[in-house]
Image 1 (tube, rainbow, N blue to C red):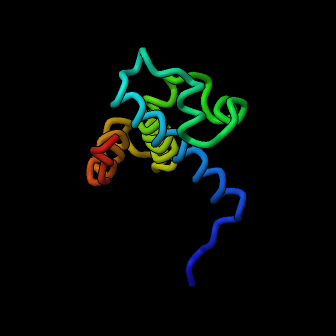
Image 2 (image 1 turned 60 degrees about the vertical axis):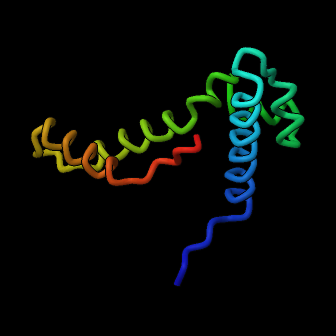
Length: 106
């Protein structure tokens, strides 16, 4: 049986994705420096306040995938056996993450 996420989690994920998608599209079209947060929120269809609930700055949007991957790596490292050598843990986590697809459009 599939596991369903609560409606608020789905909305949160969609809003975050909409903001990231709008920002990256703007960055590609106009350049990072020329793009304003007001342009991003207009493209994403969210309020400026909503943007800041998800991201502290436009730089954070640019590196959002990287930050999420770092968090997953840290979580996986914490889940490794305590008696495992640190280098072995790191190699195992990096190997597992290297097999995950990366959205090359981002």
